[in-house]
Each structure stands twice: as C-alpha cells, then as structure tokens.
Length: 124
Image (cartoon, rainbow, N blue to C red; front, side):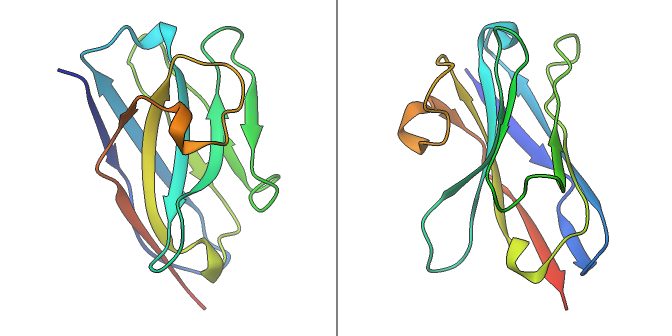
C-alpha cells in the first residue's frame, strides 16, 4: 500500500533552519505531485509548498516564500523541505501529501495520500 513517511521535525529556536524529509513507497513516485502542509492546534490544515511531477515546478504559500525550499529526488522517492529563518508561527505538525494533479495544489482535498506528520516547534 501507499506510505508517506515524514521525518526531521524537532525543536529549534527562531531564526534557525530545519530540513524535513518525506519518503514515499507503494506508488509511482514520478507520476505524483508532492506537497507539504501544516496544521497547528486549533487551526485548519494549510498549504506550505508543492512540487509537480510534470516539470518540477514549485509553489509556495506566501507565508513561507523565500524561506522554505521544496525539492524532489525521483530516484530515491523523497521530497525534502528545507526551512530557514524559522519563526514561532511556523510551529505545527507538518504533513507530506501526494496528488495526481498539477493545479489547485493548495487545497488539501486535491491530495490522495497523506503521511502521519512530523512536529516542528520553533521557540522565540
């Protein structure tokens, strides 16, 4: 079956960097757009970044643009998310997700598979 497994979360101080990773199995990785979402307690799940399968185009939420970078390695079936200049408001559980679409990638409903998440906590 399809599995998405996130890793790399932890506790950091504001201004520091963190690198998350997602390893996918059980699917044809090169045919899926991969995305990262996050959810803080009491808030809805929100889009962070996505990278398409078709041409590797990347998209970011305005709140992380210029600080976060998403990439993909189709040989290793991984989707790293490099996060820099972290802020306390970046604190959330971060989820990896897979979609067959290349549009409307900011909507959770357009993703077919989800990981269990990894917690990121940024202290001030």
